[in-house]
Length: 115
Image 1 (cartoon, rainbow, N blue to C red):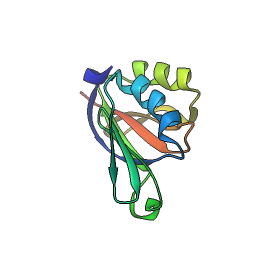
Image 2 (image 1 turned 90 degrees about the vertical axis):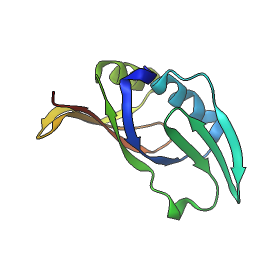
Image 3 (image 1 turned 135 degrees about the horizontal axis):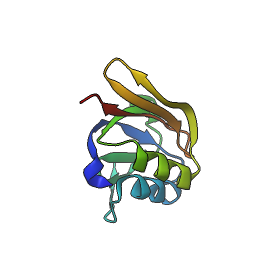
Image 4 (image 1 turned 120 degrees about the vertical axis):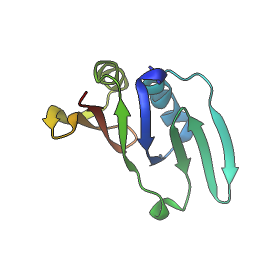
């Protein structure tokens, strides 16, 4: 599914990297995870998602938009991960979108752009 994600804008605050990383691996199809410290934060890069855990959460947004080629694999991955669908797939002016709350509490809009 990693080739399905074309672009995204998101830094994701999580309580525990070890718990959150598997969800993002499922969403992206990525097996490689880069973990590294930065100041008081613990960071992990999973595909296009930058996850962080630490005291600087007020400086980083936990919401984001992910542009995908197809919503079907995203919905499947979200279902497997136990995410809550806040807004079912619906048509918006520039495409079709779904909004989901991940088990870690972060909220993402997944957008399939109109052809």
